[in-house]
Length: 175
Image (cartoon, rainbow, N blue to C red):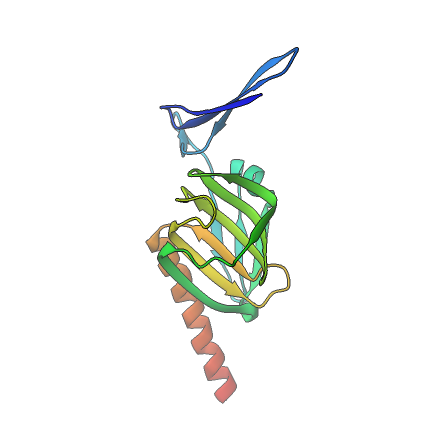
């Protein structure tokens, strides 16, 4: 028997009762700091030809991915959505983590191809509503969309990087 409880400390407690052993696992979702030490969080870096997404610590554990590289030539569009609900008819998470109202992380197979999600606090279960997400649409074989929960400031930096790269491509094609 498995019992789950959301504690006041922002942790998710999972208690597994078996015939011989009682085990308790504490899964921390919300804390960004431990004492005075800050944990490394998702890092998005841009270079001349690609966008790199590096996941650290628990993010790697939940999404079962460490790094995603997206060449700039394969990016079709980048947008920041305050509310995101553009879901296909069906989606299957494999591999990854889905904790309703806490976290959606990992690779999702849909009728249109693969999506990668790392979204915090999704509202809803079947077709969740995500808030403050960056959506990167690609023409890659692996991921059609990469959907990330990040702040508006971080997303604006990434969007401006992509737009500058698009302008420089147009200038090169004209010359």
